[in-house]
Image (cartoon, rainbow, N blue to C red; front, top):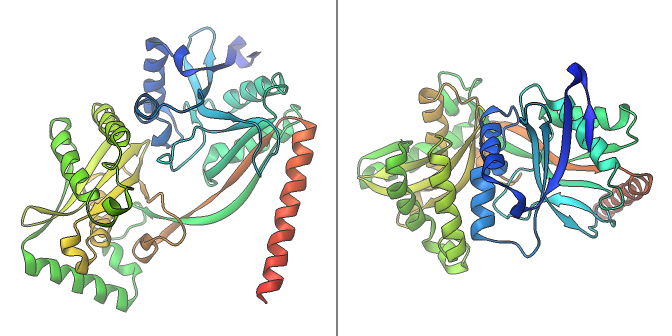
Length: 382
């Protein structure tokens, strides 16, 4: 559907399948990656296309794209799957594309195009209520500006939609702008400082401890292999949950890192003990933020908690050497070990965009039922 907005520009939102993405559109997607004001590396072309090519889903994904008809500029994009029903909305609707490695959901939106994109998107969804009653977002960063904007536009622009939000948990992050000269230690308790220093001494007894960040595209393949060896050892190997456990997952991460490395959008960090990798992590870059994607540690150094020491060094290194990075998102749950060392939090929650009266009524009813269940559970605990 098309909608004419300010300056007589016409914006068109369409739904495309994976097979309908041509080379020209993918290049525009890459450009949107660089221009978006919504930090989300899990919607970058390098991440999504690498996953879909190496882990083809049973069902074709749905690409919602919005372009300016005059300039053909891509101003908004989201990647979804069609579902018949979920516990949140027992009606046909869209959910984020099914990738267990995509840790944040939402849209990519060009700088300054948020209102334009949502007007076009809501108009499109309204005209396709027979296909989709809405869009469900299981894991959103509620502090992002686009979330507030969609909440406002859905209910106030005459489209008759609603965008309900529900906070779920707080995720640990590091605000590098606020990180003071004393580093992370100033935020720790005396016992935490003592533990970290003791663990660092344990590593130093084994050899010289060094932290480094691999950013050079040419060095990335070797660094990735070192990461896969460390991440694929120990308990992850035994459980079959490492990226090396399945050939398709290994192919996905190698393709993704290779693609993002061409744009300086992926860094691999390493904590070394005498050139032996004690811990290593893949970090994705989007906008002015770094996102912790995957970490692995060498169990030969387990007594010193090398993964925790790595995340301490990562924040302090980024603060000193990457002034363009304003925040590191740990992409972690509320009970993560990162809570012990990273001082800041962002609110993660659920969102449900409903575009029909039936969906709004059903979603509201289920929301009330969930509230009653939580209230009853609270009473039982007491």
